[in-house]
Image 1 (cartoon, one colour):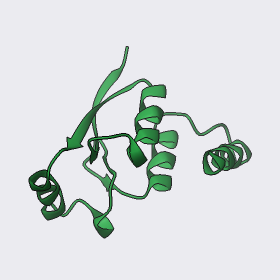
Image 2 (cartoon, rainbow, N blue to C red; image 1 turned 90 degrees about the vertical axis):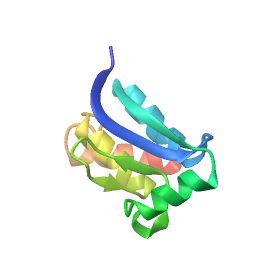
Image 3 (tube, rainbow, N blue to C red; image 1 turned 90 degrees about the horizontal axis):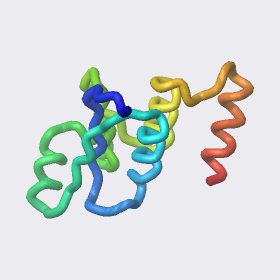
Image 4 (cartoon, one colour; image 1 turned 180 degrees about the horizontal axis):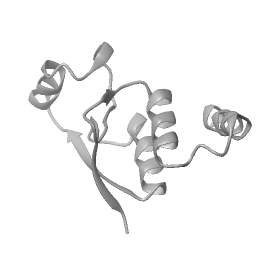
Length: 102
């Protein structure tokens, strides 16, 4: 059973860069809100919200309201937050290596 904790992934209506975030959250058993940008009006709303540092997507909003962009930072946050980052620095480095190679 997935845990509902108020995480949002915002991205265009398609797979692209957000898909790896969706897989990681799904693998951790996290029930998240998948916000799909389908038109220019929605994109302008997200841009005007001030949530997109550097004007980039995907956007990951945490349960505390923190807004993250940059795929690597988002994935590492998910991994640390939900126990997917191994035990210790050596395992974390190996996980980083696999993710970067994928």
